Length: 113
Image: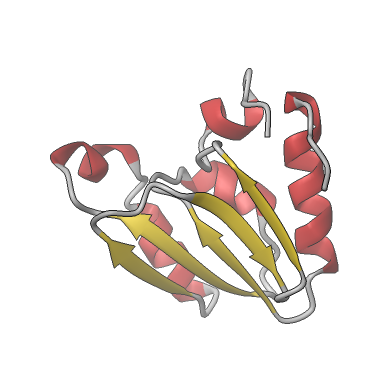
């Protein structure tokens, strides 16, 4: 187990995505497309679990995420109760934390994971 400092989180996730051979499963209530694109590569199967229970959810997640995931052959699952933030890489490595896939969650001040 590792505890990552805020400036280590995004590069750590990028490295795991780069190493992923088959798939990446992501759970994040809210996602911004620019952050997601900078994290992913197109030759990895991506599955995402998003929250869709509250009105605010419709305004926080970038709607273009849905089209992008479809374009790269991934899947999105909606769960009204999800608040978990985790990444599973090729069924072997798991990152659990509090960061959404947004600028403030992963790129700006970020979180300590």
